[in-house]
Image 1 (tube, one colour):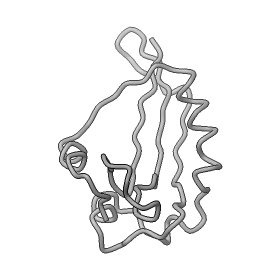
Image 2: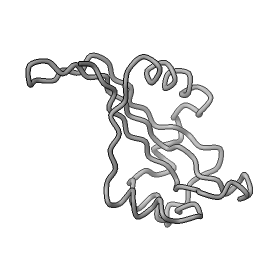
Image 3: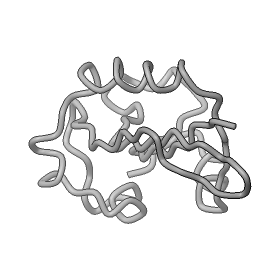
Length: 116
């Protein structure tokens, strides 16, 4: 069986899209690994791991920086979302996804405003 395991770090989650564009959450990092699961073992067959430079600098004193450990200096030379999304789309379209969440993600998703 083949599956895509992925993780995405953002500046927060937003349930209400009426927030001004400048305050909407932004992707900061994407990780995806296409895995083959055979006879109880697994092997990475493809990987995409990239930081993503947001349009606006992140608030390094905010919750997103605290949770992710990502800083503006780390993002300075990262590709923009427009460069990353074609590669993300390609890897997502080719493999079934495995989705999981953590208590921290669940806690963050209950807010209706960006974190950070």
